[in-house]
Length: 184
Ligand code: FE
Image (cartoon, rainbow, N blue to C red; front, side, top):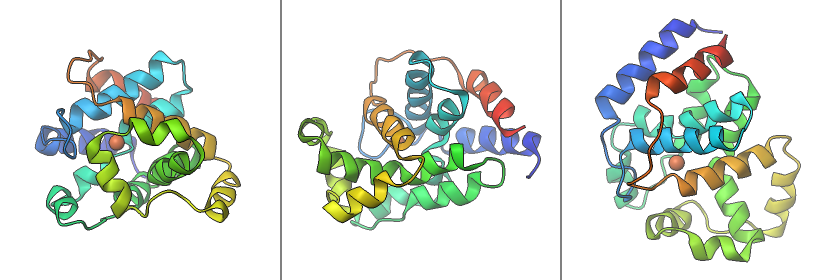
């Protein structure tokens, strides 16, 4: 595993450089979205690995040069895979799998929960199309066979809720203590 101090430095730098960018068509920044998802996980008493996964689930967006422009062009840059590859340097599957599967979890919920689709934001409906639409029955069965699927679904729910311009959260340094503990 790579050095944890290095990870914390990289995360601080990424957030300083790109965290103020808007979160894919929502009225909040990338940093606010990450902090809100982590706060929602912590408020629910989720295990530490899931608080960390919630904080870092969209790290692929910060690693990617121009994902906003790509989304506008209707291209999927598979930010979940970029994030998975990056995070594997420090974390095991309990963190990386929910991150890798958080987009699939949206397609899963759209196929299995009729109320879910109705509540998606317009930006999220737009990306759903780019991401392949609701899962087929075969894909649903496949997805449920992954040991991290339930964690990925929990992460997805926080992901969808963490778009509130008014929400108060702890700061980045607070959540980095979880990152440090989890990566150690
Ligand atoms: Fe997200």
